[in-house]
Amino acid sequence: MQGTEKKALDIAWVREQFPSLKLQVNGHPAAFLDGPAGTQVPKQVMDAIQDYLLNANANTYGAFLTSLRTNEMTLSARAAMADFFHCDPDEVVFGQNMTTITFALARAIGRELKPGDEIVVTTLDHDANVAPWRALEDEGAVIRQVDICEADCTLDLDDLKRKITGKTKLVAVGYASNLVGTINPVAEITKLAHAAGALMFIDAVHYAPHGPIDVKALDCDFLVCSPYKFFGPHMGTLYGKREHLQRLKPYKVRPAPNASPECWETGTQVQELIAGIAAAVDYLAELGRRCEPPVKNRREALLAAYRATKRHEMGLFARLIDGLLAIPGVRIFGITDAKRFEERCSTLSFRLGEHNPTELAAFLGERGIFTWDGNFFALNLTERLGVEKQGGVLRVGLVHYNTAEEVERLLSGLREFIGR
Ligand SMILES: Cc1ncc(COP(=O)(O)O)c(C=O)c1O
Image 1 (cartoon, rainbow, N blue to C red):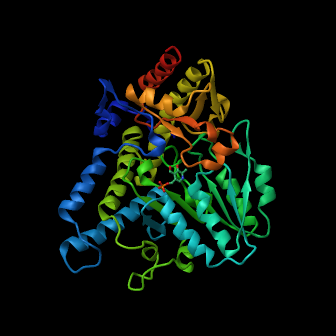
Image 2: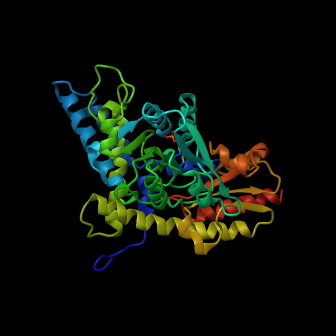
Image 3: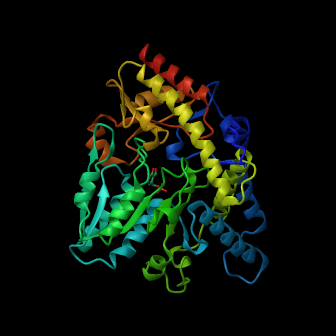
């Protein structure tokens, strides 16, 4: 980074951008440690949604002002997501959420499969990257599921190598686990998939708030993520290599556009939220420009933002792990060794003795500390770890608007729970 001034994240500025962080619960400030299920939204996103509804609210392709503005807004949101993914704007598809997009894509891919063709999924993944592929069993596809290494909740790469064969047509892997925070070596897995002649599909929903995505460098065929996990509105987005988006045939109504990417966007889109997606990307870029002022363009600004947010998140995370390890009865799932933090992000799940995670989440919730309990739809994983029948785990997610004080409040809340 020669010649570039790198500043630490200005946490006061960050928190000012998120009006909802001011919420109080029973006299306590809310600590939003629930980011993995959806992050809070900066005011830039709220303003963009309001501005669209005030000045551009219409359907696309009409011959009048608000419709023309809607077309322009959609193009600029595609350009924003193209900078986010590092692809071309026509390789960006908007949809209701990742799950809906993945079911639609799987159905379209299913049209090209023959009985006996194989799809590889994993035990580490959210069910939205499993069930849509398993649905193709009805057409004769064979699903092969890769196991984990239980001790550190990483993917078992030897098992993965065994399961990718000449029959494999698609490998579906998450970029990062929404339960244990493990970051998978997706570039390496993409190479293995391609060497076998298979397509590579990456679920980056959990990774997107924590690290920069570069579909060009990864060379994956498809990658999905959901803006509501990275400070945007409740929607999903897909990157697809142009050749695949043009070749595959999505299920669609006849009068809707046949050209990609629009043929993938079933029905009327939630235009106001698409406006909000562009604003979420611009918020991150603004953050990056504040952290490394001379950045050249939006993509560079996004990379600068992630350098700063990652430093901040992992600083908090080290504190969280140290604090948790000092609490008797805490069992953390996944990587805890600081030397291996590059292999994980700042999401962590644990159990406290035999306590039910729901009871713990409710106790913390009354004190304004928002955490999640259960399986978070990573059902294969909670079953594999043997915790599904015991209520799953308690999950704490740290994103860049969280603070050291919030981590300390969580730790003292846990100590208070034990000492009742
Ligand atoms: C890793 C991961 N994949 C997929 C999903 C599903 O995303 P969506 O809610 O956009 O369908 C989630 C949601 O929690 C997730 O965490």
